[in-house]
Length: 153
Image (cartoon, rainbow, N blue to C red; front, top):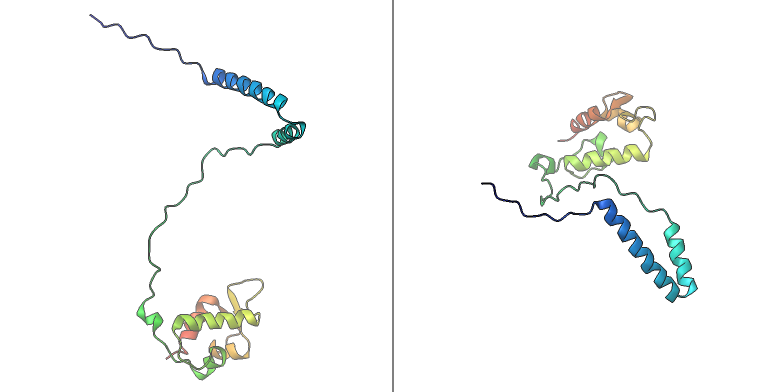
């Protein structure tokens, strides 16, 4: 024989619950308004008139923080290299790592406005850079690092 199911409670739909909640809050607000001074009521009404921010449908996903140490550069990048005479006119004559030489060359390019205005990847050479670029008047930024590295020993 089949067992009888126990009687379940009827749950009110969400809309009905919300309506009841609104009525209750309105009644509470009216009672509070009678007791509160007029200034506070005016402030509450002004606050109610402001449009509420719409809740976004999907919450923004936060990337989990990774406990990584800063990426280490290979030893070849850290090793100080002596620039040639031509390159020393731009970056200085003291031995520098390859990364610092590249940074100083970029500082020189930005200081003198040598980056092409139409195509930002191209660098227009002035007198000092033309010697380093092998006589070329314009060089791609990726080709520039290749040409600069030839002047390091």
